[in-house]
Length: 326
Image (spheres, one colour):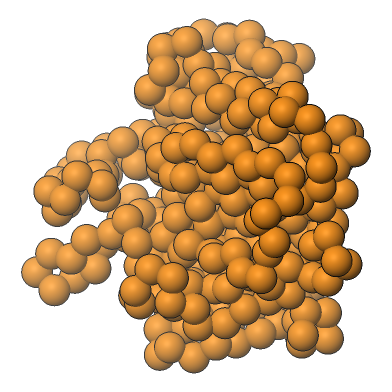
């Protein structure tokens, strides 16, 4: 999951914002992180506030890119085992990535970059990497190889590569929300592809209505919806940024044990909670886990709900979803 695919599985499951009054306030829209970024401030606000959103997005696009030679991630990945001093933000997101590596017992691993670099889900070439190349790079996927000391990061395996795509959009959405709150904004939406974060409610006090994309449907075709206020919805799925070859579907949510698209009985997972980063990581982890295991995990977490769409097209909700969101 390269940063140029920041939403990783997340843009695989685009979420559509509906029922939102876009005539008030200001909008920042751009193409960054290989997706369309859209921030709508629904209050009255100064131009400087929306400019601040632009600056934040461009800052993180620069910091976390694996392809920009001036980025923190690029410098870490090309340090050949040496320590690299990085920003507070980079330390914070790496620590979160390591946390979810431990949470998932390594099934989610931010050092997947050595393997994800082999795959290309965007060019249309439909090329499957050779098995020996995948197996060789799998030896370098181990989040325990990441060492942090203060603002210094070391990859003790010099061939390991960070890939923050599974959590970066969530991190950015949370930082944007914190900034807008600090600037006194009470009503706003933040859309980073498959990551939707809301600030407060709509100006009339009602909830935002978020539509969940139908897997393998036309863009904008909604299969379910969720009403939220001051929360985030993040979806991971297998049906975009993928290709078929010899009647087999290859998607970009890669297994850390095989280096190939994970085997799952889920088409998509939508996580609803306060933090976009939390939802970002959990949506990817749950997609890897499959329906039964994922449902069990989510039902044990506080203030986290989910919508699962299984590969038979059925929609499943976690225990508290109907009570909290209908």
